Length: 244
Length: 291
Image (cartoon, rainbow over all chains, first blue to last red; front, side, top):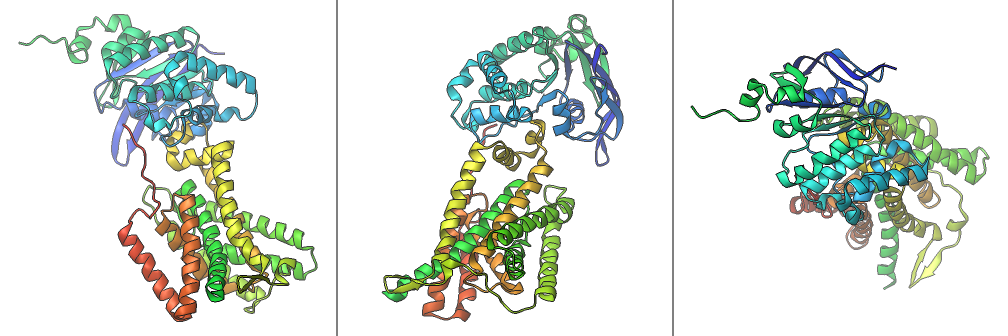
């Protein structure tokens, strides 16, 4: 049993000839809440796609819970306890909210029905708006509700690590003020979280540690508390630059 | 009057075949976004294998079950070796050529081993015709439209209520998201092809007591079923059944009032016109999307 849950070593991801990720190393320890910030096109999403098995990396290694998962297809990665809420949410729009939740628990099969019912109750308590929407087509939900559904669906596979790619994408600040405390609560309950976020100000406030990505590599990393006061971060990502 | 009823009943039987085959194409399309052009030959294979096994002295029930099982295995093999490797990019069309080629191989192999003469499957439902409004029809023939509608409702329940069915819908809607749920979309596609092939074989078996089974029975029928699926909008089960039945009835009326020769020329012309009017298919899906 190691303290490090996810270890990414010298990862490279390429789309044809274009190298989106040049060399990225990072880790998430058990119980940690880690953030990745960076501008658009920095390669954040590509790293997440490689970790979750959506895209095979061209080089490097990924180890999860002591097992090498580099290049494994996503359905096998989920089975090992690593769930991802993808960028753009990707809920199943023509199926009901309830069906989406059932699909989230797909790998648990028909076993342990009472446990599954209890877990479903638990995620519905986290996002009470979803409860009234259960029989509704998921495509008819608002953007914020869809994000809640995507997270709830991810949780139902009972992951040890939850990756959320671009939580805030297209969402109003009011919704974000609702979503971030839920993530903190989940993390306090023992879930390790890796959050990719363009809204650096939000991410730095809730996470323990943060990686800053730029041009397909890690520019710097450290405790979120420290980074939040770093002048380079203030300048580039928090938009505190004084007009000169 | 009797004439019209006769055309209508025969048309529903023929339409039942198109509808059942088009349902199979729908199942495979949903799971893999590929059309399997061997499907007509699977339908033929189902009929022929059942006839041969029955001739060898196996009880009807056993030969029917074996035939469906064999077709399902063939369907799975086609997915694994002739569709999946040629469907790796979103706009791949290699599967088109490979499945057409495999369909021809199946037909040639059947001609070599079975011969080109049609033989019927015995059935107690095809012994005495039923009289209906001046027309005559075997109970066996009525089974086809009934089976088409029953399969459609069965699929609806399967897609909405079962774990595998939900997984198939998830794969159809969004392969990446399905993978993130832990669904193996390759396995789902394999099962979908096996299921469709099973239904296709059963269709051939259902008609074999009325229409003698022979190696050439599949190709044109399969192509028409594909036309039906496209005109209906291949993502609608209800649509393909409605269009399938309608197409069969239309063919019988053209045959009856014009000529057999006019049937396919007119039929395919209508398919083309329908596609011009409804590029997404008549019952094509208007996707609910919100970003």
